[in-house]
Length: 132
Image (tube, rainbow, N blue to C red; front, side, top):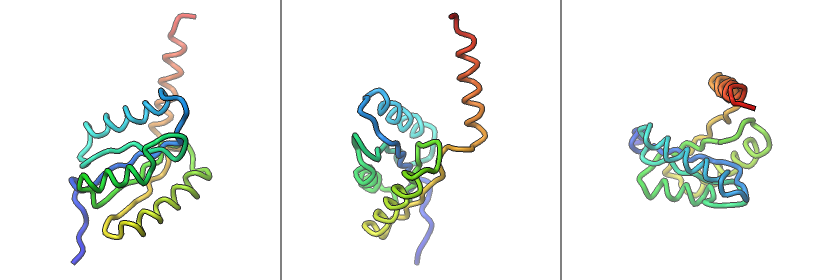
């Protein structure tokens, strides 16, 4: 008998592009820690598509080791370009085949979310308020 995983069995796996700049990757690690504090998730793991680690597969394994039965793949991308539609969809399929008892769900990228416009306006306001 199949059942839906509970919130305590659900993990977030944040997927960013990856950078050779440690500070850029650090933002994703910071976000993962912050989201873990805020949400009901068993874990929140950062991962990167390329250029650095942990990889998506490594982060998925970390989620499973911490008890996740339901893993939300959360693209930390602004738009649904090639990486989201092709690469992350392929990763979702590969993970689903490898771990058939775990459900992998691919979320939409940040894109057109209304709160993103608020963030952009806040950044612009803060910049305009700075002394020259």
